[in-house]
Amino acid sequence: MKERISWEEFDNLCYELANKIQASGKKYKSLTGIARGGLIVAVRLSHILGIPFVSNGELLIDDICDSGQTLKFRLRLKGNGNNKDTATLHFRDGAIIEPTHWVKKKEDKWIVYPWEE
Picture (cartoon, rainbow, N blue to C red):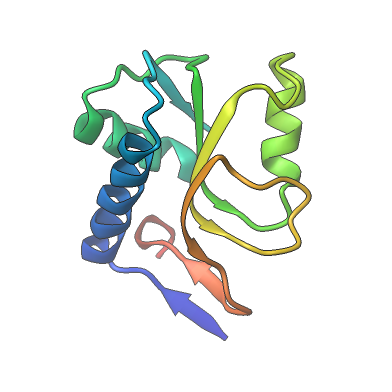
């Protein structure tokens, strides 16, 4: 079963994530995204939060943390271990890593973001 996310819902999720990031009290000077879906989320968050998008930002963004493998790999690739903060729109319980900031728990549905249609 699939859960399709509209552009409007995507934008709402980005604003929710931005609010959670701001509410955490952490101040980020830059952010970056994981290709491909994370880039779209990161650019939107960059605009909402007024934080520059750079190639190796302090806050690592992805669209979803399902298994956690992508976030873990990217953190290791950049030599940051698990010290870099992360943010996603969706997070699945049982993933090997939990993002620092996330909006919604992923259910047992395959999520289809609007840029994937």
